[in-house]
Length: 115
Length: 114
Image 1 (cartoon, rainbow over the protein chains, first blue to last red):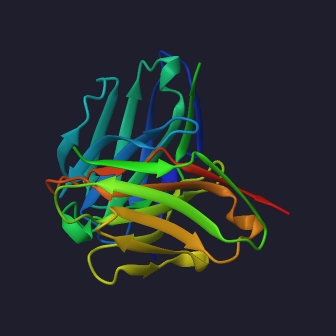
Image 2: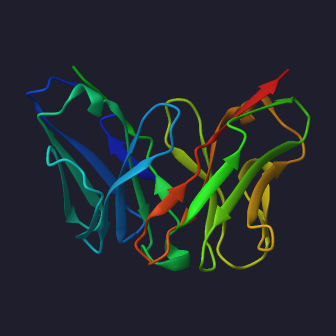
Image 3: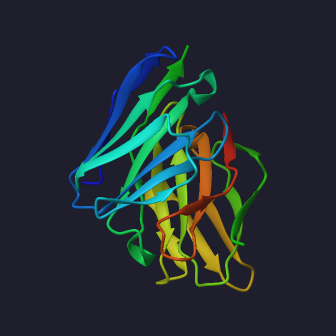
């Protein structure tokens, strides 16, 4: 089983709202990732968690706040977003971030619209 | 710097014809390479991976890819296209430094005509 589950599938929020995206995997993977994807573009890496510690932040604005409560769960907290933040947000996981174990499996994504 | 180039942002084939999607990479270390497929409004699905074992890699849905070090290529092929193959395809390489980062190509849209 290579399933990564993301909720919700769709989210509409105003610029003053606070919301959270959730990602879960039960494959025993110790690396988890958040990506942002705009239409007709490849995914852009936002954050990497390795063994529950934040290892990479790709200069993401502070209105995006990641959290990794345990090895199976990854959250992305959203606050005061801008319309240009509307995109597909993808979560992925891999056994390990290093070498041949960095085979990433993606969730179906959350389609976010910021009004 | 590492990079991935997918030649052809849009490829159109007839149903039953050969599918060839091109991917070239640059890397100063032995690469780990991946092909992903994305159907509309869905996430990325792993098609196949090269992690320094056999150079000809077989994946799901009848796809395969051949790693050619001398040509720095990892082209994706399928002998006979099916309508259900119409999707966006991304080639990716693991970034140097064991950070977990993947470097993606810009993607190729595959259209399959009846």
